[in-house]
Length: 394
Image (tube, rainbow, N blue to C red):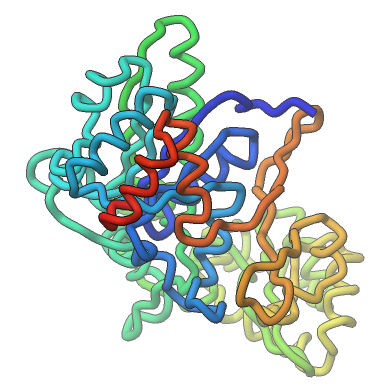
């Protein structure tokens, strides 16, 4: 079956999540992605280790469907390998400060001089403008600076999301930008630079709160898991666990009031619209908590589903892995990896195409697993390849 990006070659110099996951998504749709690792393996390979050799959990997720070459790109010989690879590539992915890109010869002017059709997809922490281009940052910094952490938790306890939502969202934006640049290249014949930043992504995710504050200057404070703008919307304890319930809009509120046996709330001016229900959300959450406390999670969710009220269980990671509905959706692709005690899931990409679907066909590569193969494709003979091994360049 043909793939959307079949014939596209990507050089992935990305690290951690934003860059590598962008490249992985391109690979899922058919691109040939070459991960350029440091000799011995790059630092992001070993975060949250799960294998005998130390490969990390996120690494296995964001580097599927790739080949790996290990390369000392600080050496003249390594730079020459990069130049050869760039000549035959369509995309370079690199998430690092602008100055680092320039120092490594991965900035767009340098790359385009080698290959005018190249697309450089470069994400940074804060952007490429002069005041911030030198600064480094991770997902949590973007969350914090967007206002999202301030609005999570409680007023005395700002809370960061423990899953890297900004990193993964930036990667999705970068993948979209890359495909758009490749689409435009079909008519212009020229590449371009695709830029994104963790901070700009985080600001987009927090945009509703930011726009509300700019328009109304209300200095909204954190309310834990309870929504301040509609309700009841909160996390509730049931007899054997926790659930989340989200009631938004008048029709849902009518159904919820009937479900919990409180139809009088429909004529109470405190609950006449979403904003007022958010303002009096503590009262609504107390009612819902009372309704939940004697019910099991299964019973509560069945009743909410029958009333067509959005709700779901609060799962532990183990419960999410074991859930039959999630498994049945094809969300998990179970794979072996050297040094893993058992198969583990790689999570399928979030977007699917009906005729040309994505596929996770191969596990993340071990460090340098395809070095000789990639060098041979670049025109090096066996003696030259062995010489680079002997010098520690690959």
